[in-house]
Length: 112
Length: 115
Image 1 (cartoon, helix red, strand yellow):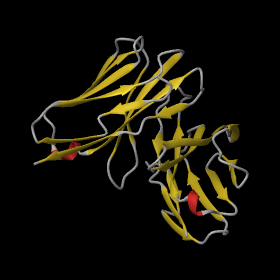
Image 2 (tube, rainbow over the protein chains, first blue to last red; image 1 turned 180 degrees about the horizontal axis):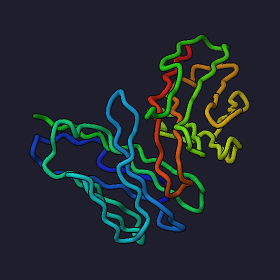
Image 3 (cartoon, rainbow over the protein chains, first blue to last red; image 1 turned 180 degrees about the vertical axis):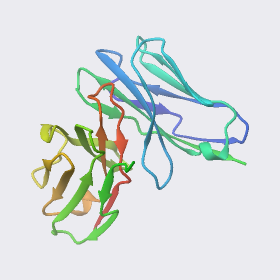
């Protein structure tokens, strides 16, 4: 994988559903994986910065896992609420590029 | 605490005009980044500064783009002359710690439309 790829591109769920989405990134020379939450008409806000293989981080109902060997991270939202509606961006930093490369995002809509 | 402040929030201009976007990072943050957001390419890094010094400008599309950081509390991104394909949302972000570990704090963006 040369780029940072996120799937699905968009997701519609009902309030109360749990959901998860994927970020795939180049595994060679990996340094860190960032997750950001971006609400409409606002600026992206950091959720997690993860560096270690097997790392798992949690903030309220949102958690993320990291597999640096195979190059993927999952973001989980337990019991989705309408206020969780946003675009979730992941970004990978590799020594190959020396840059934080962003994926295109997963847009989540939670219906009440 | 004030976050990253960008101005203008919206700019509509005609092709060929000069555009200047401004950014005030969070006080104490030594790293400042300029990103461009488009539907086709997502968030792309244009340039970043460390302690007011440009470190990597390889993402600047062409000579029409220039960025400066004359002091720790102010940066500009200038496009001269502007073209319709420059239409995008331009984000400024600052960070306390160096990447890869430092999280980015984004401004609200400057939406540029070039007619």
